[in-house]
Image 1 (spheres, one colour):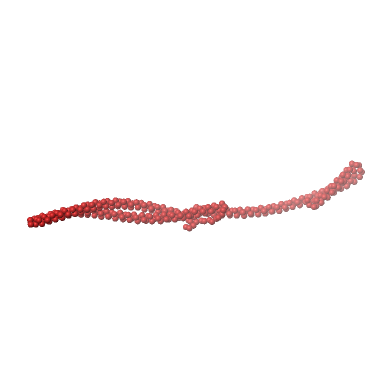
Image 2 (image 1 turned 90 degrees about the vertical axis):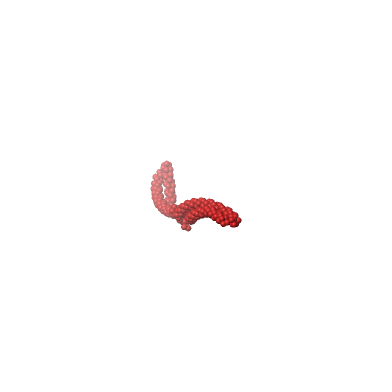
Length: 322
């Protein structure tokens, strides 16, 4: 309440008190039959009019004060509304800024994670991310980066192993081809050796037959010579007997020698026949070995082709050191 309102209230209180006093005295006089009560009624009426004017003035002051209070309240409401609107705009801007910061903090790691996943999907293992965040997206990025690193190491090891297998299988295939060629050459040489040994055995058998024939011819020659010496005369009978004895001894020795040669030749022929059989068996084994070597060479070629295919497949991966 303003000072004017309080002063008006005090004045109005005084007026009502005076009016009440006059009204009380007027009633007392009228009930007591006092003749001059009419004078108090006029005074009471004037006091009433004065009080009514005071009431009207107070009401007017109250209306003015109320209007001022309403105006001030409206101004205060407008000021508060402006402050609330400003505060709301400030909070909205702050929320927008925080949202943008959070969006950047979340979307950028997610974008990097999507890039890493996309690179892995197209077999590109050269992409790296050194994000060291401890939040969920940071852990996802670290896990994807670790997967890419481990996969790159694995692919590099497999690629090196496949290249080594390809090189080794190529060398094996080349060595097997050389060995097969050498085996075929050996088989041909063994066939020629077997043919030569067969010819040698035939020659030895012929020599044994010739030796037996020579033994008979030489005996016949010696006997003929002995007969001629015997026919030469009795004078030479004793000498012929001695010569005959020597001839018989020579014939016996030569016969023994020829028999020994014949037996040795027969043994040689049997040994050579056995050697020929062994050579034939060796030739058969060598041919089987050549066939096995060819099969092994074919298997090695297949292995080499598979290793080259593995290398070709692994070349689709790109690593940081590739």
